[in-house]
Length: 293
Image (cartoon, rainbow, N blue to C red):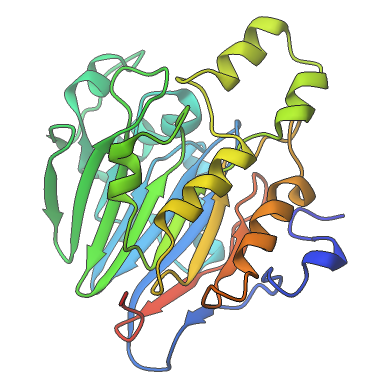
């Protein structure tokens, strides 16, 4: 099974082509989004709206980031900034190289910046306060605190005109704040790190298992499903499951509960896809017509 393949029972809800996915309508595209990588070896999300092109996290090497951007016809030189969620290596591995080579502005909070190891960023560092908002050309970012074992980790909502996306990729549990921030999104990128039984029976040492399932660890499939229930509304059109463990999870396990939830006849149609480690995801395009009600 390749990294995008899914069991037959899930085929009606998963999107398996490598073409653009256009959400509702054929009018002028508002916002494009693509996961470049997701997992313990590196995480990065590409977001484009209007004339603005950014990365949320840069967890791949600089060379691999460039290669994956080229695969979606984007040149790294055209990026406007990198926005950083926290300082763990799988989210910042390529940050300094990209910033220093391309003179890219880096949006980051001070605790995250001060806890990064090695030489500092030579380029333009623009600090934001956790919980604060900032504009980056055509995009409006709202940061919010998430519970994870980093200095000051954050998630983001990103808005462009009437389109809103939510990103929460590393968190031990969904706090009330996280739940509130992720409401009324058109698209949601949400961690679904592990299956609880697979983690329990898996090969990791006991202390690592305890860290993963702690309130400062990573979200389980069941927790992700519960959070989606909490933030569901009629305008939610696409969910991308993120940061799946290659050891303690599987596409089947991650998707089975959520796919049943999203097939509920009381819900409007919602597309579900998986972000994976070794392959660039599909480009999702949100239009002005795709607004929550």
